[in-house]
Image 1 (cartoon, rainbow, N blue to C red):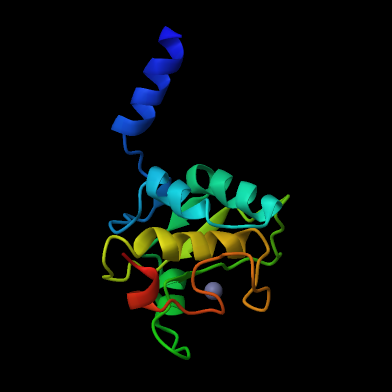
Image 2 (cartoon, rainbow, N blue to C red; image 1 turned 90 degrees about the vertical axis):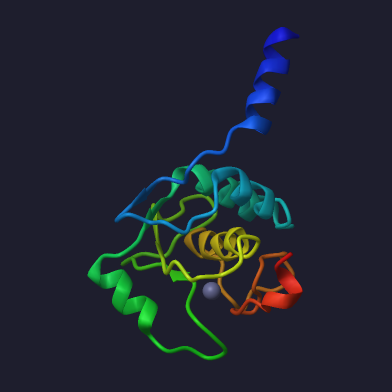
Length: 146
Ligand SMILES: [Zn+2]
């Protein structure tokens, strides 16, 4: 009983940084990512994204990421992307994601991250109705943040 209480308290009180390389400065915490991931309705995809919140490596600032983040796209700015020779699946996700560090409100960051992590788990924009933020491929800030 004592142990359970202590663990719960720790989960509420602490914020853990997502694992990153390249000096990422604009990331959601693991806890924010986890909270946003709970909206995903597909069980395999949700479990995958939840694990990715603490398991994926977020890459920022290297040349590939900077170039990819600057690529123009329909309907807004790129929040992040995956770059891999293989496609992930919800059972075997990609181990890293590129993050563009957009200057968005704090409430948007976990939504963008969950969207990008869903891509690492094999989700793509055509697959709708799973509760992934930013379906089909862009976030409507005013509707989905806050
Ligand atoms: Zn996307």
